[in-house]
Structures are given as structure tokens and as C-alpha cells.
Length: 207
Image (cartoon, rainbow, N blue to C red; front, side, top):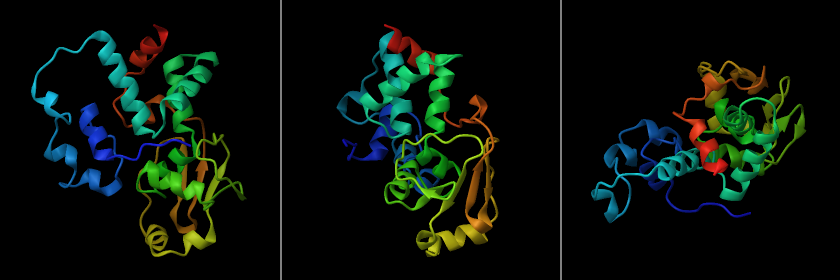
């Protein structure tokens, strides 16, 4: 499957905001966006008025890149969201938040969504006691997410077990001692920490 292999810090600079793609580095002074908060390339130095279409495109790209998806996959999610009841934009964000790789990241088991995705792909994550190696797997309320013993015995996860539980979104709970997370409910719009104007994405695809 196709995937982006370039510099992820470049993506943050292009979208003009932190997408938190490199874990702890994004919270430190080493963050490339902190050092150079301008778009990459020579054209970044010139001020150009962005069209309405350009604003909509940038919002779509920001969300797509934050969740680590290629264009065709993102379009597929939009199509599903459009067919669901309720607001299309909120439905889209709810689907993206419900992906297994994102849930593993939200539970603090991965430093970034990319690392969480790798854990899932390598078969280290269990859902209700069964191995699930599909990052796009959609979790449901009541699902229990745990870490395979082989990975749980590594130094990184020993530190997680011994640390205090960090703040969780209201739709998730986490037991650090047992490396077990649970999906309490469907994700709520207010739990998403990225600054997203989903109506712009809807307008983009409505053209």
C-alpha cells in the first residue's frame, strides 16, 4: 500500500500548524515548526492571497496528513461519512478517531499515530483478546484494547505501566498497570485536539 515517506516535519510547516507527527519531539524546542513556522520552499517568502478553494484544500490536507492517510483512502472515509445520518463533517472526524491506530495513539501506547500504526501492523495489539493487524479497523463502544505480552515486556511499556495515567478523551479509559484500554462510547467532537473546521472539507468535496 502506498504511503508517504518524506519528512513529516515538512508537512507541519506546509499546513501552518503542528500535526504532532513525531511524538515527544513535537512538544520540544527541537520541533521544526517551532524553528521555522513557514511553508517549505522559496515561494513561502512571498505573500499570496489564498483563494476559497485553496483554504478548503489546505483544511482537507491538514486532516488527511494528521491521520496519516493517502488521498484515495481519505475520500473513501468521506463517502462513508456522507451516507451516515447526521452532519457529514462530524461523521468523518468520528470515523477517523475510531480507527484502531488512532485509538492506540490516544491511549498513550504509541508516541505518534505512525508508531501506533506500526504496532498494529506487526500484530502487537489485541482487540477483545484477538490480534487485529489492520490499522483502519473501526473500534466500537465496549471494545477492549490490550498489548501483546512480547511487546508489553519491553522497557518502553514497563515505563508506561509504572507511570501515572495521562488525561484521556472522555470516550476512552486506560489502565496503565495492565496496559489495557477500553472504548467507553463513540468519540465526541469536542475531544478532538486538532483545530479543524470540518465544514471546509465538506465544501471542498461538494464542488
